[in-house]
Image (cartoon, rainbow, N blue to C red):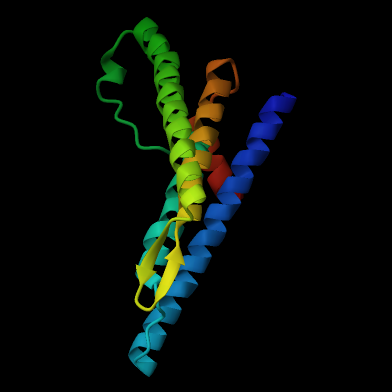
Amino acid sequence: MTLIGKIIDALIRALSLIGTLCIILMMLHVTADVVMRYLFNTPLPGTLNIVSRYYMVILVFLSLASVEKQGAQITVEIVHDFLPARVQRVLVPLTLLLTTVVFAVLAVRATEVAWAKTQLRASVDQGTTTLPIWQSYWPVAIGSAAIALYTLFRLLGGREPSREDAQTETFNE
């Protein structure tokens, strides 16, 4: 694997680790909210906003590149399998190009929005307190940039994962 491939792999692993930690934190947070709500009649303030604006956004967007790297995304191969082999060979780079362009555009736009929200110090009222939410815009930009970078790497000749690699990686981790 090239140095660039190793750097991209390390980035994807780091983002995946953050996503995993986020799952654990979300599980603990929601559990604590349920316990506080039903045992002490005092729910944790802001749980719904924190789960929807932080945990879920981080989980979805920071995990995109990892899912793509493992070849674990949902695919519909019913049409693809009936096409001639030479057409199938053209579809893979075309799909990678389209994915790269879409996520690169999303990354640029999400970065603009995240920067604007950061400048405004965007927040949401939560009862008697204010919950800052400007940080929750950055995972969209970072995750979109990561998947665009990875698909560009693959488009330019980086190794393409196979279904067997995805299964082996899942079982070995």
